Length: 238
Length: 380
Picture (cartoon, rainbow over the protein chains, first blue to last red):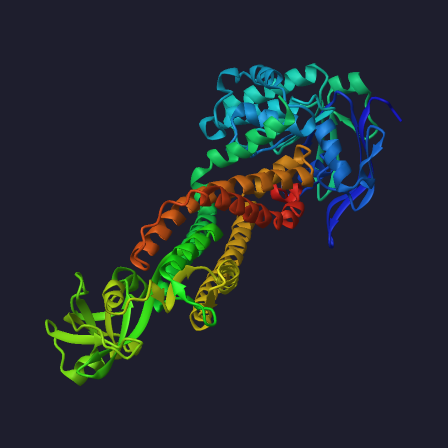
């Protein structure tokens, strides 16, 4: 196995009764890659995100995070993997309403290890919200809230950041700010997996996988991707 | 920052910054705590007042001569000292001496006492006229007054039956009041001890001393034994008819209050459980998010119990203050008693409410464990 591989999915399916939300998916995600997952509603994007984010398990197939078999872990072990290795960003932000921006970031530190206010402030500074540390989520704009989420996702230096429709609730200006942040993260070597239905956002990734009816219908790879990881057999150039 | 500080920060922020929700959630605790603390105050203060009220039934301990011995006025002082040493609360006491006088050669049963003391012990005495206030004034029982046609203000001439068969010098007694009791006193003439002593000198002999004491039957029995032991010339006896009915009333009252308290406690627990379940549903997104951040079920349950305890302390504090106010109102309006603020009830109620709330929160564990972040945080 390539040591630079973050995720390796083999024959992964997720069924809800007769319905296959994911159907026999094979996928390899490289360390430092920016992968966009696109597809229409019901195509299996969020199910894939949930499995990659250790929030759900496949009904069949294997999922490796590094060397670790996720599909064999229990709830407790998955929680430990989430806190140590994964940063999550949601479309609806999901900040804790009664905690300030700073405290929302410290909560992630609390569950990971030891809360450190200085580090949490630095994370807010990094997303340009140092001055808003003491504000409650309702006192922040949508874009600001999403930047707090980005800071929260990064605070524990995860191996991979998963973002589910991160710009879905943002205006164009804030979308640009968030994508700029993602670009910085990617340049610093963070593995980014962004689920989106927005073609412009998807185009920011080095590689796009297009899902349809729970299957990977198409893979689009950039030259940048090919340079970094080599062209895959099923990939097509963009 | 230490983890415990962050834990406290999270649960106190959840409390302080959601105050309107907290007030709604703590309403059941406040109502329960108010009722229970009011009942607790009433349980511990009102029965004592009721016990005092019940003392109007009359004496519950009677001291009489042992065998052929004699009880004297000095014995009364000794017994009072014994009671004080035993720590028994004395509501009242009264000495009595009974003899026969002669009125127009007709026997006139007489009872001598200290009127000031006797009226405390026998608050049910009804007098047409006045209590005797000077020497030579007497009360005449209603039956006796009807038989001889006595009226208030009449002066009667009586003699005492001397033991050697020689009558004393006649004494003129003024009737200051007609006594109605429904008891044996209605057929007697009641006069001051000193007046009877002047007619029939006896060296301070008494026939009976009645006591009204605060205490249950066991306490009174113990006191009676002590009196018997310390003064061989007297015999103390508990009036069981009185003590048992008093104990019955107080026991029933306390049992009633306990039953009501248990029912209210159970209802509060159910209410808290329901409220906390609703809070879990309301905050499912937050809980799911924390799970995605890696929180274990144990950590989330710990946070919720912490919030429950704070909620209980808060509801308990408001409830205790409310309870003191309600208890004050009830005791004033129902028992006509001015209650002193029972501040001890505040920490007791807060602790009890924190326990109830903490336990009530514990039942939400299953709901917290059952939260699936993939479903709650939205998906396909």
